[in-house]
Amino acid sequence: MMWKEKYRIGVDLIDSQHQELFKRLSKFIQIVQNNIPWEDKLEEVKETLNFLGGYVVFHFNDEENFMKEINYPDFELHKKIHEDFKDEINEYIKLFEKEGFTEDKIQELNAKLMTWLIMHVGKMDQQIGKYTKEKGGY
Amino acid sequence: MKAEYINSFYIATQDVFNLMFDLDVKKNGLKVAEDMIPTKDLSVLLGVTGDLKGTILFSFSNNMTLNMVEIMSGMKMDKIDTFVSSALGEVANIIGGNALTNLAANDYVCDITPPQVFVGQHKTVASLEEKTLIINLGTNIGDFDINIFLSEN
Image 1 (cartoon, each protein chain N blue to C red):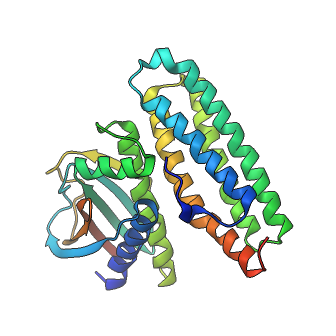
Image 2 (cartoon, rainbow over the protein chains, first blue to last red; image 1 turned 60 degrees about the vertical axis):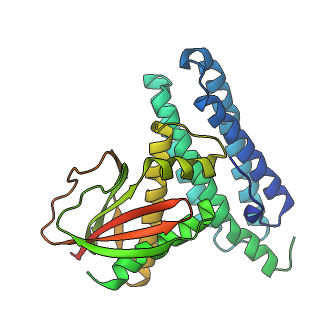
């Protein structure tokens, strides 16, 4: 996945974490989409998903702490969007535990993660940057 | 069908294409159709409920779809698999979500049903009591159609 300069919000900590998220998701998509037979890469798929999931939670926590620190007015709404997204991913995890890690479902999850991340960072998170600048920067 | 219904989806499509693909979208033309039929290789159907009811159908060619997913993922895509078709469904879903925000600004409170992706053309996906409107939109990577049927509930 391509990181674009227009995604930058002007807060170094958040921007570097966003870049890391794009990098990890990109790596995950590459592993899932490569031509290696599914059974041969399943362990790597599980490990990378775990690595990605952990980073999503870590980043959301940091971003929410930052929003609190600057008294961001839309904090509750933004946090709820993070929670809803985590719930959606957890539904997939539950499904994988119950029915196994199928290639189709992992591809479906990846499509969701990719489009969500682009829209969330490209639109929703930009509001945090805008507010921070209005308050004189960070 | 009122202009604000159409514009809500048109503006949402322009915004999402600009943000996700760095592409400008322009209106090539409008036509009226009897049924809601996919006009290109891959289509996404969204149901609208609430103050307005109806269906929206996005139709893309395989090439354009692969190109869109390549732009998002930064990877070469050579076939329409679940990743590609789901990504197209998600893009349509995001456009639908943005259109709802635009409709809400015109005092129409609506919801959309989860996207359904169809492969292939010439199969009626929704039977309608009235005529539907097809907007053909152009971008640098190809053109696509949005088939809109909405009425007040």
